[in-house]
Every structure is written in C-alpha cells, then in structure tokens.
Image (cartoon, rainbow, N blue to C red; front, side):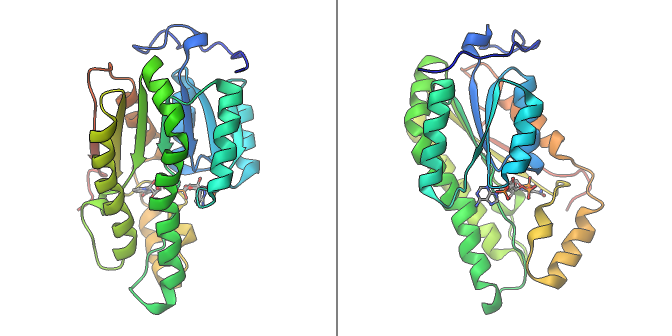
Amino acid sequence: MPSAPRRTHSTLNDGPMIKTNNQARVAVVTGASSGIGEATARALATAGYRVAVLARRVDRITALADELGDGAIAIEADVTDRDSILAAAQRVQQEFGCADVLVNNAGVMLLGPFDTGQRDDYRHMFEVNLLGAITATEVFLDQLKQGGAERGGDIVNISSVAGRTARAGNGVYAATKWGLNGWSESLRQELLPGIRVTLIEPGVVATELPDHITHADTRQGVQEMYSHAAVTADDIAEIIAFALSRPRHLAINEVLLRPAGQL
Ligand SMILES: NC(=O)c1ccc[n+]([C@@H]2O[C@H](COP(=O)([O-])OP(=O)(O)OC[C@H]3O[C@@H](n4cnc5c(N)ncnc54)[C@H](OP(=O)(O)O)[C@@H]3O)[C@@H](O)[C@H]2O)c1
C-alpha cells in the first residue's frame, strides 16, 4: 500500500500531467548525491514530482531528501550491486506505489592514456556507466510500465558528448557512453509509446566528476579544465525537467549540449 504523499508543491498544476499531489509522478534518480543527479532531483521536486534519490553516499542523499521535504526519500544504492537496486525498487513501491521516471545518471569518468595500469578503471566504468544503467532499468521496468500505463513513463539516460565523439585519453569512457547511446535507441523502439526514452549528452559541466580520476596527471589537467566550466548541473537539470514536461504525444529523444565555447 503506497503511503499518502505528504507535501503539497506550489507548482503542481504547471505540468501537463500533474494535476494534484495524489497524481504527482514519481522520479527515481541514480547518482543523486552530487552534480547532475542532485540538481535533477531538485528540479523535479520543484516541478512537483515525488523523488527517490539513490547513491552510495548516504549522508549526502539523506541531507538532500530532508531538504526536499516529505515528497522525497533517500535510498542507499550501488548500481553495480543488483540486490541493492532491487531493494531500492521495493522501497519505492512501498513508499510511492511505482516509479514513472527513471534517470540513469550514476557515472564515473576515469580518464587517462590507454594503459594496463588503468585496467581496473575500465571494468569499473563499464560496470557503473553502462551495466549500472541497464541493471537499474531492468529492475525498475515493471514499475515504469505500470506508471507508463497510468500516467506515462520516462527513462532518461545521461550519456555524454563522449558518446558521440571519442578523443585521445577517453576511449573506454567514450565506449561506455557509445554503448549507452546504442542501447537507448533499441530501448526506445521497444518501449514506445508508453515509455519515452531520452538521451542527454552534455559536454563539460562543472561537477566533481574529474576528482575521481585515478591517473594523477590526467586528473590535474581535467580538474584545471573543469575549474573554468561555465555550464552548471542546474543547466542540465533544467533541460531534463523540460524534456519530461512535454505532452505525451511528443518525445525528445536526444539532446546534445555543450558549453558554447567547447570544440
Ligand atoms: N560533468 C560532466 O562534464 C559530464 C559530462 C557529460 C556526462 N556526464 C555524466 O553525468 C553523470 C553524472 O555525473 P556528474 O558530472 O554529475 O558527476 P558527479 O558529481 O561525480 O556525480 C556522479 C554520481 O554518480 C554516483 N555514482 C558513482 N558510482 C556509483 C555507483 N557504483 N552506484 C551508484 N551511484 C554511483 C555518485 O554517487 P556516490 O558516489 O554517492 O555513489 C554521484 O552521485 C555521469 O553519468 C557522467 O558520465 C557528466
């Protein structure tokens, strides 16, 4: 039995589908402890969604859910661990009934020259960026289909410019995002029209993404570049919220966006 939503949002009547709090759509955001995921959770909560914020850093998502109020729940989850995603899906079902929107945002960008020394990073990027998104989608799919039948479902996959243009030093990261792009197109065809699939492909966005790079020289160089980044996580979240807010007869399937000065 889903618990009754406990918060009224002032913007509930703004969206084409959201009429009352009882009908507020439910969004699940992976990697919501920082950057684009955190900003997306905020944007969707502001737009009247109930949100489940998932990540491993439970202190951060708990603080975020507390800030967003009673329509938000924090769930500790590692996208490389299917059992933790299963447990998250059960919690979403208990609290909210089902998920209408899944934002596959969790990701790592462990750049560096192609080298044996980076081999653990390669496997990890595939496990988080590609298999993590596939696993979360597979686990939440029944809920999304249920939400899709009732209110319309959405899957938003956070890819990258690197999913379209590979460069020296980002080969395996790019491969995970190229994989995400191909899988998203197949998924789009399988799930239409009840569930829309949207691919978001940002260029450089000011987040902590480069801080986790293990190759020291590369980390330093990328951090320096990111310290001048003009595009914010809020910019990307706004685009995601906009795409989701379109009427159900329209699907924005792909958005490629770069800082205006990025090659
Ligand atoms: N920033 C950019 O320039 C940029 C450009 C294009 C695409 N992207 C993509 O945008 C997405 C978000 O990145 P960001 O820039 O916002 O970086 P970020 O601030 O580092 O956020 C990454 C998020 O992924 C989560 N995460 C990492 N490993 C995880 C795991 N095993 N299980 C669950 N969550 C995990 C992190 O949470 P925990 O560590 O708490 O688990 C964190 O919330 C990524 O897919 C990235 O590839 C970013």
